[in-house]
Length: 89
Image (tube, rainbow, N blue to C red):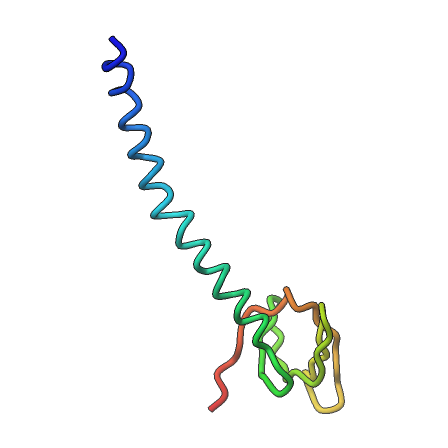
């Protein structure tokens, strides 16, 4: 009888394993890559914010940065609001 009860949990364990490898693990990898990108930001990088604003980093502080979005127009952006780097060609 206990073997029958154990066999009922096998599909649940398999589903949890699939869930981990298809959803949780890739999300953790993306978070690591994003955190590495945010830590590697430096003055002179061209960034895209979550709001769709593209600008050039002119100064960096611990939690935020100064971004020039047009000539002589600078805004302060929180580091977590950066969506990514813009390819500079």
